[in-house]
Length: 271
Image (cartoon, rainbow, N blue to C red; front, side, top):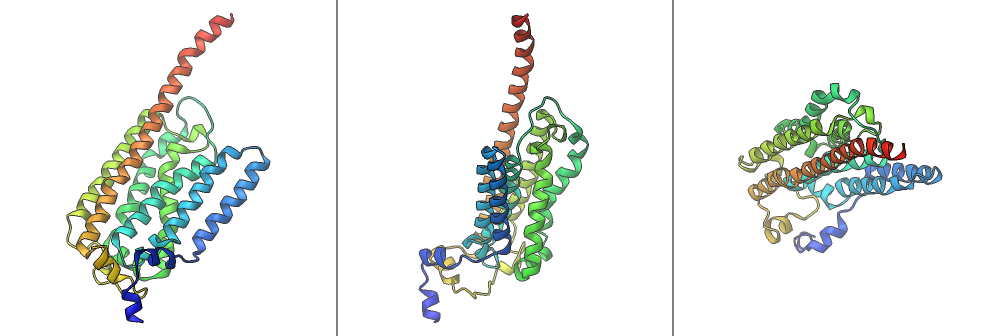
């Protein structure tokens, strides 16, 4: 049996480590339910966002990414975090629809709390005690996944809330996202250049799946390289998500300015 585990290939890992996960099942059922409701209400353009959100949840928790994040690879753990905080929540909010209106509403007063909650999603769960607990306890891991989705939604709400009155002005939104990127980058830099102590459980994984020879040997992911890769994931790809949000706000800003400029001209032409 040990020989079979040692001989595991990458393709075998990618095929054999999928699992039935309650969160993934719930996400799929919710997406199907909303899809059916949206189609009946003739709001099907929302469905692709919700379908994509469900697919990303499945990728994060039920695919090999989820399996490897459970005490094997810190980089897989970090990828899972990024998917649940930075990808799923904006897709869900976009799937709920976007009311068109100019200006900012009551979302202005929630900027600081929402920003702190979103940044805390990364910093809090990378405290060594909580990080190790989430990798060793199934219950803590489920709490972590649910909290990441909730905290990510709170963070993205001032930017992508369905009702316009709950969103903040594009200019403030760009600062909001840029500073979030800076906070994420700082953590990424700290993790990249720290000793392998951020999540010490990844230093000596318990190889119940028999994949460690593949990860350490064929993939070359030693504990230090694995942590460096995890830090780089937070440092570079994460900021690309923030940059995409900033570009989206910039487009919204120019579109709103164009509507304000064209409005009086159209009115004069009709007069």
